[in-house]
Length: 140
Ligand code: CMP
Picture 1 (cartoon, protein in one colour):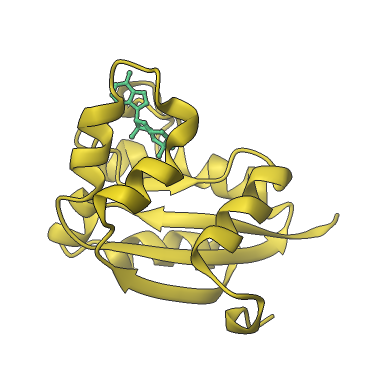
Picture 2 (spheres, helix red, strand yellow):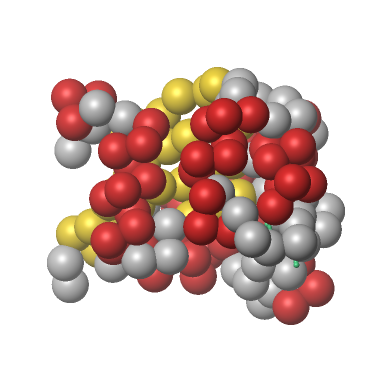
């Protein structure tokens, strides 16, 4: 299986409830390595750009407000099949549809405040990692 890198964001609903350790324990227990990590407050401009693909969706403005409502932890997860593995560990976008044991089932508050983001393809992972990190910041 290929070693991949993928972008993970721990969202404001989770940082506010002090859940970053519990969430990252799930990634590490599943074999993913955190090879870059920083906590930051997204500006409105950054959140708009990061979620630009959703700009015509009805939830876009609320999503930008939510993502700027508190600090986030942006991180790069690395491992075998990391893009899919991360998404399996996160669970479905809507916590009501997420499988038992997933992060969103256990911690998400709603479809918007769903605790974590993860890249949906290897191509997007590379773009999203480059959005937040310089190559020299990744420790493989
Ligand atoms: P994420 O994986 O970060 O990708 C886009 C985000 O938009 C998603 O998680 C949710 O936080 C949010 N989102 C997706 N669908 C909806 C929806 N129907 N209503 C509100 N927010 C949504």
